[in-house]
Length: 457
Image 1 (cartoon, rainbow, N blue to C red):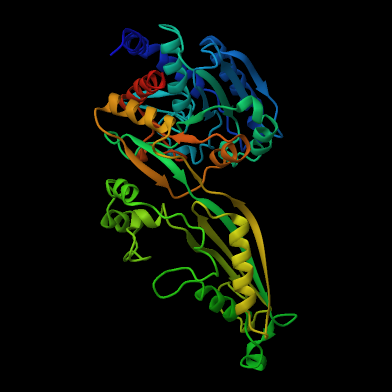
Image 2 (cartoon, rainbow, N blue to C red):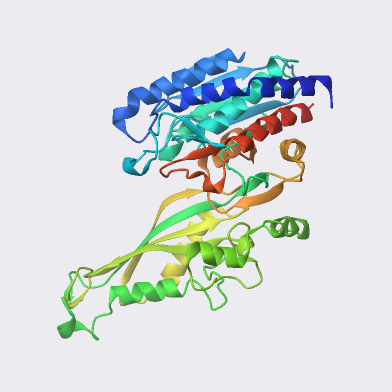
């Protein structure tokens, strides 16, 4: 181990208590982005974040306006043009604390109990932001940074990053980097360091079918007028075959197949079918038989009914034949599918299968592409080695079943791939009362990020 690396690691250990005190300061600011009454707190948190970046030697630090809460930017470009440039992403906003009565302690007065620090935002993701800052500080204050750094810390992640895409597009040149470290993904377990290298995309639809021009008396018109509710559920039922495959025309045409090596990595994940049954309370699992459950929720696209509405749904009885029916349907996408491609497939399917007795329409509500970072890329390999150096074991690699907007936006608008990791745990109660951060894992995370910085040189 080089003297520079060892010095940085020792600096982090010696300053651990101060790091925790600064995290407590950060957590004390109630930066609840969804609540207008906390707008002043959210701005104060952005300013606190900017001040902290300046304190660790970052240049050109700015609190930059967006259409909503501001974003914080900073940089250190002293390593020169031959050194890699790393963008570090984070968010300083937090979820509301309701229901307050379920909290054991004040959610904005951080308290250490045993190995855990309890406060809103401790795990998601102020703890991860401070871990990143303190890793950089530890390197900068000892040997100096061997890489160029840029920071993007937003204030709207908990409300869908609704202004971030436009901000990234507008500032694409400023944000250009070789790759992005995003520590907002978390770990599978305290002894299971994890890298997320892929995210599924999304195409979300509303489908409506119409029959008569008003609700009808089912006794007078049932059997004569095609019931829109029945027609809709028949349309939806036909969207899967008996093997669980999606029947929309061309749906699988662009699906990127996972190779043997990737499927072997997925098989290393410790989650088993019985765990999913226990976790969900479902009687049994369902899906494409040739893929494992972990593959179905990561490397395979899906189509799910999110909601149905038609006719009378109150208590008691009302014998109507409804005039219309509606369904909300989401498709999770994998590389190289696009929302536009799936929208065309959905429209084609609905048009081909709508009987002449009803009228149908398809509207796409939102969409985002899938994102994937090659596992042999510079960023992934540096992070994987860093996690192994800190934990003493090879990390797990996974694709996430959901979507994270900033990852897709950075890839689309800036051409920057993201390496997702993080040091939050499934049991940290993120978004729930008594959110916590496991401090031993957090400390190892700082070490892993220090190693990652040196692994890039």
